[in-house]
Image (tube, rainbow over the protein chains, first blue to last red):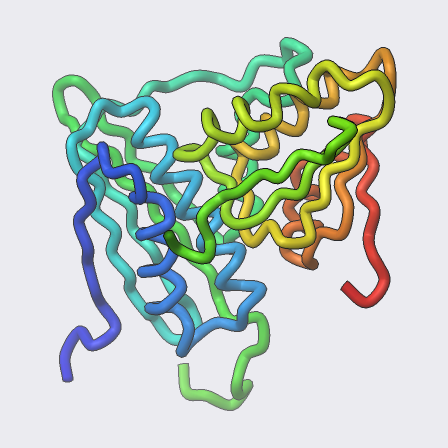
Length: 140
Length: 107
């Protein structure tokens, strides 16, 4: 059963139900592997990644892939756009960059590959691991 | 309509509202319009969030804007969040902005 833990779905960026559709997909795919609090965290992080793509990248499509590796679920969010790099500015606006901060706070690990004008397509990887390791004696 | 569709029910006195469903970027404008009367509230505003099942940074931004709008006249209360929603409020730093999170016993 190769790649049993991998599934990808593509969503039109203009869909008005994109974010809730992605959350249902990620929650259902993660359910066998993560507890409910972790699933909530992961769906929030994925929502922020997709919302960023919707708002800033100019992409026509967003693809979401679920990988399962051991006790961890990795969600890959890909678009075909250009990542608009903005640095957090301490301008007194408590709302600035809260999305990126929330995304990072909700997962165990994340990475970002920025799409550029010359090489479009941003990839965000978000990893959430089961909080309780099933067995410490598992072979590594 | 899905059970998780975002809904707002304003109080008769326009000093609060009951929110339900999922509040994210794609319903932000709807939420902003629905809550707009509360920006003119004369005192404290209480949002019952006990039936809110999801919130992202857009929803957090809306609450921060509402708090700023009423700050001179009252305090924004967010009442009865589920454990997950309460955690998002905490991580997003809402208590540090003067927004009061009212946890409800047995909720």
